[in-house]
Image (tube, rainbow, N blue to C red; front, side, top):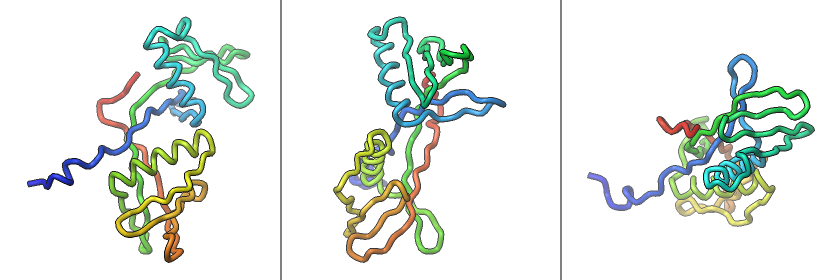
Length: 171
């Protein structure tokens, strides 16, 4: 029988992933800023607030017209069209021990890590708070994907794993 505390743990964090179809059937992820703009526009389109369901999206030196209904992107110069997709993904945060084994962070730490990571990735915002895991406080460096024990200075690698949610393909 499960104890009450384990039943009340938050679910693993989930994010909406956006991809574009490349050559040879390979799918590529949009960068964080583009994902945020795409998801905002998609939600506006669902609410009927995005005119004609089309978003103009600048990615590097290229401009694309994104058609939310057809789930297509079109390069505005070449007129080349590619499929795009939207998928719900769960996020797992892991840390590596001194023997090369990976261990999953607890659910609360994973939620904090993902929220902080999203702010860092999209806007370069670095949260100065240090998460506590058990009795220990850690400084997190997303650029090097490391955690450093605030008291001992011991540093370990961390990783972020995205996994498709079964049956959750959003479009």
